[in-house]
Length: 294
Ligand code: AMP
Image 1 (cartoon, rainbow, N blue to C red):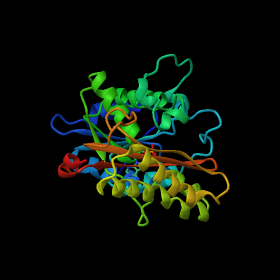
Image 2 (image 1 turned 30 degrees about the vertical axis):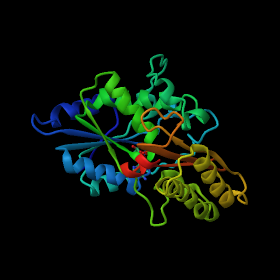
Image 3 (image 1 turned 90 degrees about the vertical axis):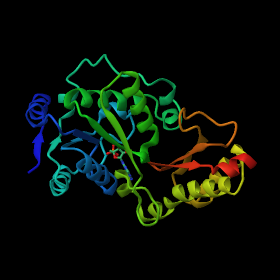
Image 4 (image 1 turned 60 degrees about the vertical axis):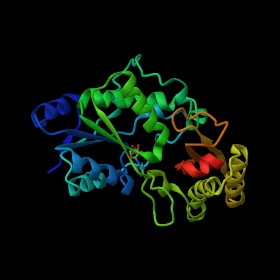
């Protein structure tokens, strides 16, 4: 039976009684509206932890005014039954007022990592993410926490926060789970029209295009980025309200732009379909012999 914890004292009490001396406590932070991506993190946590707690909290701090905080899909009853099916031990589902009573003046800064890629069009977003994750880590004190590669920038920022603030826990980043046509599962996909959903396949296709260009020897960053943008533009130009936010190759450690393509690069894309913004990314490792020639 999955226990539902709605307040911070309840969560702390549960952690005190359930944490065993030998086994690890795993935390899977989510905003709910579960799909296969979330379930993959939960399954991984269940596999390697003794107890698993999943947080379901649509965090107002990471949405700017005018973004989709109000309309973000929420379906707690369905999420809870999926969590129960998956054998989750506890779900932490606080109200916004429980997490942010009033007068919040302390937050976690994330520096330049928070300004790259999605940070450029969502200023303050990653500070909001880091702050809520820091609060969850303090409340739950997990031994391990699970994040998806789908949100590569978020995962890097959390890893960096844990390292910089000496948090005694392990971050595990799990692979992106995709629908059969390659579209990464996202709670926001359900808000796409049929036309937008079919066009959304271009995100992953543009990442695969970048990969194939690089693996066949292309070493010009601007050239790869232009090809990605061209492919996306071709697919979305007739869809009202659709536009590219970015299609970039960046350094996976700093998210900064690249001078050269070598070692490992992160191809990352974000496309808006009206108010719905989709993101995806692919890590591309350049085979050593190709690197030597390039
Ligand atoms: P969210 O509820 O969107 O905040 O996501 C909660 C966690 O699930 C984050 O760590 C995401 O990176 C992860 N996640 C979301 N979509 C996917 C996916 N398609 N594959 C793997 N992980 C995902």
